Amino acid sequence: MDSQPSEITSEQDYLNRRSFIKRSGLTLAGLYTVPSFVLTNSFACDNVSGVLKEQIGSDEKLNSYKEITTYNNYYEFSTNKEAVYQLAKEFNPRPWTLTIEGEVEQAKTFDIEELVTLFSIEERIYRMRCVEGWSMVIPWNGFSLCQLLKRVQPTSRAKYVEFISVHRPSEMIGQRRDSLQWPYREVLRMDEAMHPLTLIATGLYGKVLPNQNGAPLRLIVPWKYGYKSIKAVTTIRMVEKPPESTWSLASKGEYGFYANVNPDVPHPRWSQHRENRIGEFRKRKTLMFNGYAEQVAHLYEGMDLKTYF
Ligand SMILES: Nc1nc2c(c(=O)[nH]1)N[C@H]1C(S)=C(S)[C@@H](COP(=O)(O)O)O[C@H]1N2
Ligand SMILES: [Mo]
Image 1 (cartoon, helix red, strand yellow):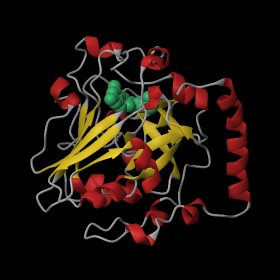
Image 2 (cartoon, helix red, strand yellow):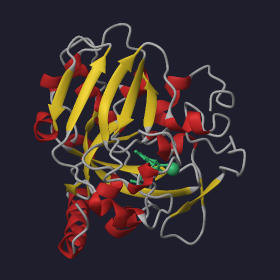
Image 3 (cartoon, rainbow, N blue to C red):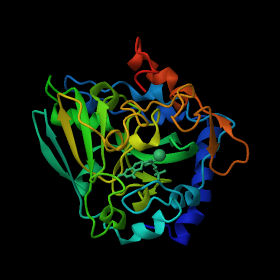
């Protein structure tokens, strides 16, 4: 879906509704509690409510719908961020299926129309920090990946989760060149995938996910550089050994497996101390784990984050 004028106007309604929620003292966390009926099998999803109590800092505001949908990294269409949204109009995100396979008891292919009815769709306002040094604040709609993975019952051999994007050069002009190895792939450790902040996004600003942002569904891992947040996912595969990802194949020394946002680990060609928040004039300090240290630092306890970057 591309942005129609009517969708852009309704952004103001959206902002009004949010400030109503704030004023009325309803904590957003309270609205986001995962219904207990989904928390049944051995992989309990952590309680989401504690994790989401803090949304964004008081000096941070949402990026506009226009900013979020006209400045995109999506190499399947173009390496020019400002060209992606136009080229992505050619893409058909429906019909669509998502297959979950590998080390699971119940491999399954979900139809997108079914998938979006399985879980309650929450709003998650997350910072997005690209490894290139820019960032945005985006209100996603979606559900915790944990809830979905629980459905298929990972086996005890499931140690990593591989995500594979669509390969459709007929609709994705950038895939006719090898700027990257297609299809785009990413990997998380199992515990990272099961963390309640890890999201499958199916929308933003309360609207269906635009093509340029990864329609019809994408991963969002807010404490990691944006390249981990793979768009247009068709396959999720649970595996025992860590597979290669697109960016590790492209340049291992520059794009690590973990890709945790870390101001103290420079990219070989630039510093990561600061970032350019789209729409702002002055640069901001980049925060450890992109500001989510309280929620995720324990995942990396005892690891040297300069080695495992
Ligand atoms: N399939 C796919 N997913 C992708 C990319 C891509 O090129 N292809 N780019 C990544 C990068 S580098 C970033 S910063 C984010 C950008 O997401 P956005 O355009 O929604 O802001 O998507 C990530 N997911
Ligand atoms: Mo990025």
